[in-house]
Image 1 (cartoon, helix red, strand yellow):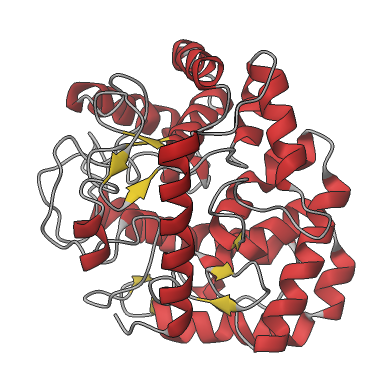
Image 2: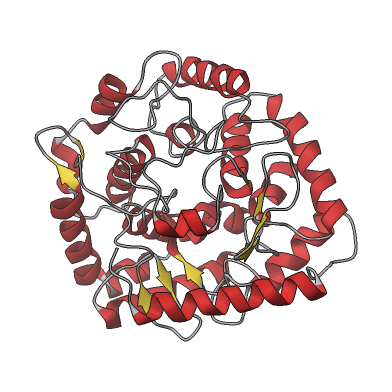
Length: 368
């Protein structure tokens, strides 16, 4: 990873906030879980765009916004979603690139490097927003970026994400090899480009079949093309969240994935962990500094995507998990980013978890 000045300044800003939280604690909201989450969402909109949090992730993150976009629109924030896209597209087009993040001062940058999910989640958010005018305004830029993505990320010989190339991803502190999550991004992008009637280089390839053939073992999805005997949270959530498989087999796949997640304890004490143990192989220096942050810690955005997938596919198990989330929100009086494997607030010598996450929008969709 090539460390740039923006990485250093952002890391210092986050570290300073961690020190402050250790002294003064998290901002607490009054009310029940629903009221707390509604207030968080309102505070996350700063008049220009939806921040990822009211804490140190007060910038625009393409991935997180894309995950929340559908829930935000369903909750009545269509105007604010559109304004966020206007802001992001103006910043990205000025910089002539779509990145993982835009700093609070408006500078696009990638953390830790070019991510396989930035362009798919931005296109997804545009589709969800219904802002066709943005497609027309930024048509050349978007087509250029999708073509760049196709050439950089996609392997036409395998119909999958290129192997043995390090892309940033949802688990961005780790190096993985054509991960299931990454390949789900290809399918989501392919489907959304078609719905938006944009030029689609992926239409000639059966990416869904490639995922099923190479990453599905009929009990769970492998984490990546290394095909280790290990069940992971993101690999068994995003094929469902991204609607990779649309035939009747998707129900059987979810049944198998749910069984595997439970057997591995990834949903205990509540969803969802990346891995049962804190796997260190493949981790970057940033993960070593925040030991376990993307190992066996419990991630709430991934957990919410897991719950939404269960609900949308008709699995009542999401209700039990949702009750646990409600208790957490009302206990801490905010929506926290990540928890330790035992369910306590995640802390390390260099980091304290973030607060007031925009992900609360997905919780509100779940209780509707």
